View 1 (cartoon, rainbow, N blue to C red):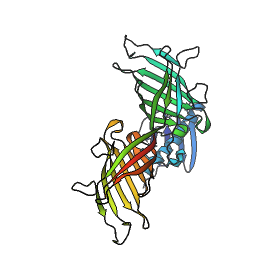
View 2: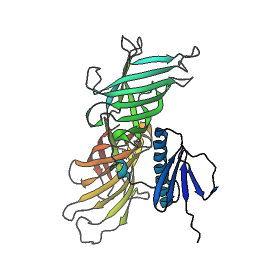
View 3: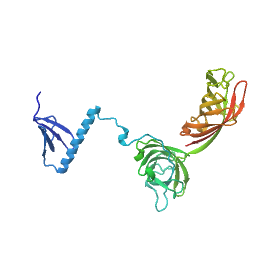
Length: 380
């Protein structure tokens, strides 16, 4: 096979690659640096370009070779990376709560109008304000400063006061010092709770995703100053009556696994699936608020104790579509039984708490029971 005696590689300022064999070039260019390889030796011929440009081109050469190697390995311009190479560790969930101080008044305002509303709009449609607002631990401006909210908000609705919010939460304390969380979303300021997406971050919050909830803590109409609380956890108490109907033509609880032994005094091993009504009052005819869906299993050989796994699925009111999940032990002959709340959905995302169950009525003939549930749940 014919072997060329001389192979020239030339690179221009943008790192483009050209191959020259003998006197024929596949791509015509005017090289600034030519590196010649002959008999295992390399020599460099300089053109009138500056030394600085030469050094830059050599870096381009090295970069181009790196790109070629990557492309050759992964068959394209995309490659998979080990997250550890970027310093990424196991993903975790964090909750922050702080107060956002939007100050228009005084000698040192943290928010200034940069674009006036073009028309005499009741919502100031088109106006833009730039912010560098303190983020503090408590509602007082004098409380510990955790960071600053830097960005802008713009009135983007003609029919209501609805703001486009674009801001970075820049942290200046603790292990988060220097890291940021980026928020971009819609803020209907007169709503009690406003939810906005977290779209990214930097530092410890690289690849961040999530959401923030904003609640107005105070507002001064004369100055326009406002204090807004971001992400407040709250405690809710819910009282419902749980109707477990085993007998009759329309049971809401049915056996799906019979007890393996008929001699067991506790029906050990029995599993019963249920779709029980949860009503506002103890009467089955009272207002239906939710349904308890799940199963209970006889899980003790010496006493009547049930493993309870159920979701309370709300069907109306402010919690409509949300769920609360319970998983725990129910010693049914105890006057009060406590079961953990382990989670939820909708309004009850990240929920935690407990439920107290007290038997209201029990029919020995049919096995039907009405149980009062008092649920204490922490959620956002």
